Every structure is written in C-alpha cells, then in structure tokens.
Length: 556
Image 1 (cartoon, helix red, strand yellow):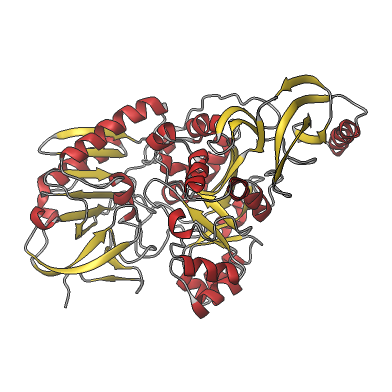
Image 2: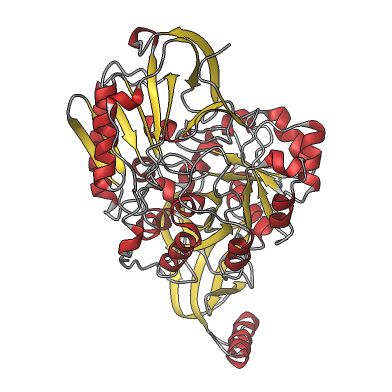
C-alpha cells in the first residue's frame, strides 16, 4: 500500500496536469465526449494522470492518441451481476467483456458462496485483482437463500463482518429474505445494520409490505417486472435495476421508466457465454435499450453514471478526479467499440490457476430409478415460462411422465453433504419428448437439478454430473453431450471458445430431445430457487415460495 506522502505526491501531480503546468501521462485528443450531466456531446481532449482523469479540455501528454471521429463514453458498469452464472471464471469473463466496453461490475458472488462460503468469495476477489476488470462486490446476504434448501456453506453475521473489510466490498447484496425483513426478524436486522448500503430483492412486493422493506434500509430492487410496480418503488425512493439477460428480460415491460435517474440496466448474471460472445454483454443491453426507444444518453446514464452514484464508485463520468475508464466508440447508438482504456491504459489479460479445494466440491450419492418413484394422483405441477424465472402452479391428474401433455419429471439431488436426499416433482414447459438434462447449476444452493422424460435417462445424466465433479449433461439411454464445470461445480476454467463448442453441442442435443425453450439451461437452473415465486423444487421437496414452506406434491 502507498504511503500518505506517495498519495499526496500523486495527487499533486494530477492537480499540476489539470492546471496545464505538467504534461499528462496520456491524452485522448479531439474526441467527441458524451456529457452525461448536460446530456450533450462536445469536442475536447481527455488528460489522464496516475490512472485518473485530470482534465477535460485542451491538453498535451507524454503519450497521445488522436480520437478524431470517435465518441468517448465512460466504461460501462453492471450494477448487479453474478459472474459465476456465465459459467466462466473471472479471468475469462473479463477477457470477453472488457474489450466490449464493460470496465466494472458489482457482483453478488452468492453462487460460489453457497458452495464454498466466504473463502469462495475471497477466491473471486483475489482472482479479479489480476484482471483489468474492476470487480466490486456485495457480501451475499442470504446464504443459503432460505431454510428450504441445503447449501454447501453459510454466510452469517461474522462472515459478513469479515468480508466487509475487503477493499472491493461495497455493502450487503440482495436481501432475498424479504419476509424476514418485513417481519423484523432479529438475524436479518443484524445483517442489515452492518452496512449503509443494502441491495434488495422484492418480486411483486407492493403497498405497506414494500414500505416496510424500504423502511428497513433496502435501497434497490432488480426483480421488478411490471410498470406499476416499478413506478411505486421509484416513488418510494428505491433505485430500480432493470434486468435484461438471456432468459429474464424485463426492459420491454419497464421501458416507460427507463432513463429515470433512479434506474439502472443490469444483467443479473443472466448472460450465457454464447450470448456474450455472439451478441455482447452490457453493450448488447445498451443496444436493446435503443431498440426499445430509450434515448441513447439516458441509456448510457443507466449503465454508467447512475450505478456509479448509487454505489459511490469513482467512475461513470468523463470528468476530473474520476477513474480513467474510457471507451472510444465508432458509433454511439450501435455501441461499436474502437478502443477501451481502464485506468488510462489498454487492458492486458493474465491466466489464473484455481486451487484444488475449489475443484472437488460435489459430494453426492449416485441415484437409481427406484429413488425417483412418485405415487400417482392429483399433483401440483411446476409451470415454467419461456424468458421468465418466475414459475406458476397447476394441478393435474398424473400417473407418471406424460410427454403428450408436456408433464415431465424434475428432481433435485443434494450434492454438498452426501445425504442422498432427492426432491421430486413434475414440471411443464420444457417440451422434452425423451431423454433428460442434468446440471450442477441450480440457484442458489447449486445442488444437482434434472428434468427428463424417463427415470433411466435422469439417473444417467445426474450420475455423470457427479462423476465430472460438476457440469451439464444430456442423456438419452446414453450420454449424448456434456460440459464439465469443475470450479465449484458451476464454472469452467476453459477458454470461452472451447466452452461454446461444448455448450453448442449440449444445446443441440437438448433441442433434438424436443425442448422448445430459448434458454433451457438457465430456465432449469431457476426451478430450484425457493425465493422466486411461485412453485419451486429443492432437495427438501416442493416449495410454495409465497407461503415460504415445503408443500405436499399431492394436492388436496
């Protein structure tokens, strides 16, 4: 760490550059600079010293770049994401997104925390320090997300207090236990008072319950799906993070509030590696906003200035004293990137080796068809919807899998403690005609989740995931395709190109089994999340999220 004198010397140098009495380390000359405050574009130079913007106007530098004809914007900031959901490590994720204009993320690493606890969070922070991506972090608030599932670790009061000491940590991540907040449960309140900044998670919360949630100090929400709900939350002082990912897409429904200074555009980690490579990351989200009719400067504010102000990050604006995270564009509306600078420098990328303890995390018993039997009768069926992570509930007379009615079997196998516990239910919406899919990506506890048209294929797929120590497997009498995910059972340490090749084969095999969902892997991963309405499945059984309890599979 620098001494106070060294810091003062750096500050003095920045001031001298800003005054014009000293040449800058680097100057971007003749750029068209987007002014996010006055909402206009002007011509000028951007002077960089010690990694910060020292001045905007007319400057000379030791190194200069002529940006004539190019548009300068701040680096994009994802205000709410889960990097693990890309299935990539931080190193590889950064290699993909930084060159496309994303220079910072605010991550909630609760995916890896559910597997490896506080050491998993620290592992991601340490890896990110070797990356050009600015990796800010919120401490997971709900690990496990609820008592209605089995996770591999717990983040309690002491773990939160410890992690808040890390330089990259900004506050407490999404408080998914909204009933606990509203009911003023002691442990929940103890977590909230540890920090001034607490992100929210309040799907469908309205009226006095919403007032109570906000009164507890919850500042934001990324689960809003309806315009009236968004307006109410904004009216009550919340910041609304509008999610636009691969499966969950809320921008179209919320476009009428997009551009409000208390709104942000986020991915919520819901961008597959294939979509990142083929379409982009936040650059794609920006273009989606333009498609929905959002003004380009307003869209840019939602991805730069607004999150920077909300989190207190010294970025998000091209002005003196801000971090020199700058993107040069050929075209603003298309967000066509020419060059990216992080701290005034072109980003470089290094490799990272994960420790073995992070790659041996699947401790599950193999399953047999005998363990998957369900007695027939009137049962609750999980209804999945394309493009949504919320699910519905129906009641059907079922005697077993019925592909004609698209009623398939779903199972969740506990993978952390070797308990042998298996949750079983029926699900509709995947459209499989045969075979099965299984994966160790199952939010948030990341047990092994599977859906299939027959018990033998389900067993083949699940048992292969166990052998791989994590991954995605497609089976149909035999293994048809697989993508190993050895890092915590949720990420791969392969390069993106290899991941896409395997993932493409997996998705192709899923389609051939009859699945009609756009993002079946993401959709499958969320049927086990017991904090998103309405009906979910965990290793403990069928969960009614709104009632916050395990319910009988068989309906009355």
